[in-house]
Length: 338
Length: 301
Image 1: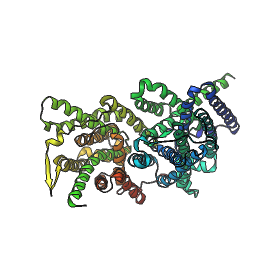
Image 2: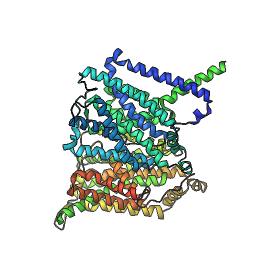
Image 3: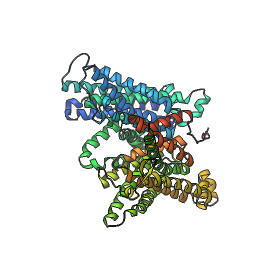
Image 4: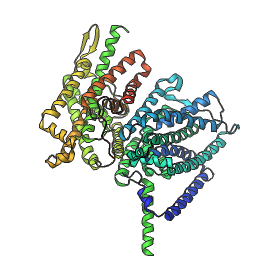
């Protein structure tokens, strides 16, 4: 599968790429502005969009790894670690600041990502995917078994954090959280794009194409992969911490393999390797799930699996790939007409 | 720890290792021949268990002897192999042998998601118990410890027969040699007239049936409920990875290591019992990244 082929980007002339980039930037800004207006024009969708974007951040983490040609079936681990880190912080320090909670979550994800990462970056492909799965299952059973610390299957409630020293009502807090999430989506999405284009990011992506050449260059592929792994863990962590705060409760289900599978699914749905695709995929996914759960709750995973097969076998570029194919075809037709 | 507890832990470990080994055997056979890690193997295990319960429930309600549940287990396993394994290889995997590893993983993962819901649709979410096969064989007392014949003798015996049988099959029979040849070099095998497609289909059916047989044999010893497939795929992967992917004899040894490690932990420090298999795997892989018996893969430049 062309999880993401850079060949297309390279064949385009630099000028063309430039204009595409700016067009993409404008599209992204337009999308963010549109989303920012959701609480004003469609307040009933606010929480749904907020959760979808939090999940989108986690999916972005999985997407980053796909750019190195690796798939992780256990990234819900970082989602859960961060959410629990936030929960423990709020339990020990009620009324902690929202930013501190999110920071604690990101830090927790970074530390656990470093520990697990040092081990899993020795592997590729099957082992990489399955070892990540094993670590997330370990964490899940720790959460379930040590219930006197973690609250077991009931999880831990998160009291509402303060914002910049202010105690807020529910409505105001949700608004602040929504816009903060949106700002993080824009900021972290931009950062991830820049990072992937940076020298470190390019080395990281070479793990997919030919990592032996990396070694010939005197670069350690493991270190290159580890840097991307850390980024992906932190992205998942920020998403998990937001999810925990938004839902007000964290449960072991956060680390359950189905969550990880969902993230992989959304990453492939949106367009494997595409940064905006992660968020577009997450929004589509959450909307379909909410409206489909009424009549397809029992077969939800079956639908996901079937859809995943269809995407992999017939539309490997995902939603973003389909969109690009359509616009490119349109552009080609335009040129023919001219 | 006195002798009784030691023996109990030992027997628990052996019974558990035998079951995990049978499932892992299917996983490692498929990987060894086809280079595909079948994530849906866990579902095949679970469906094998459900199918056994359904079949025994039906036939024993007709008033037949409980001893009939043993052949029914075999029937369930073969059904899983042919009705599920066959179509999965034939319709899906055959299209993706030349695709990247990640994609192959995603495809089997998608099958796993589908089959998990299939189980829930067909059998619901309530747990099932069906221990008549276990009771039919009675108990045995060893050094004052009473244990079921089924777990202490039948399961290890089946595991041993399968291990020796598969060895014999792969090394001494024509069909086994065809499989080995295809594993070594698919193109060369095809050029001398081996139908590699057929070999892959057969291997996958046999591997899937082993997964189903693991579930069938596990069904009298445990309650059957949703989620058992997910646990088993991770556990059997731990066994297979610790041994080295594709290593059949090695998997027997690591299954025993992991089974005993887990059962002794149950008596010593129950909270961490679930973690022991993974700790063993991580420790082994830290020292030997290819597993205990694996050899480093040749690198492509």
